[in-house]
Image: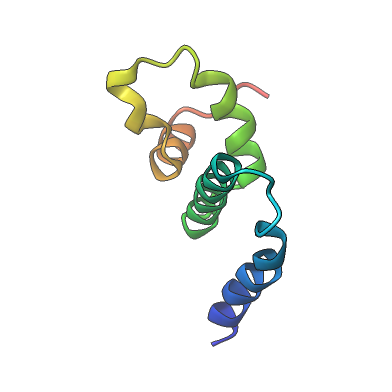
Length: 85
């Protein structure tokens, strides 16, 4: 119950802000980003690390393999081959 209430609280807090995005296309972009962050959280992926990596790689990543950049695949590949830090 606590998890579901916390998830709903995020949506309720953002609802008022989402009314003032300025343009319909901006609202669609925000909805996509919001869904992507929620997917990261559902898969146990740090959204900040995910977005920092994927936003740089998506420009040169082959279109036929774009599914590799989804949060669950990204995490699986990252744990299989950890980056040099």
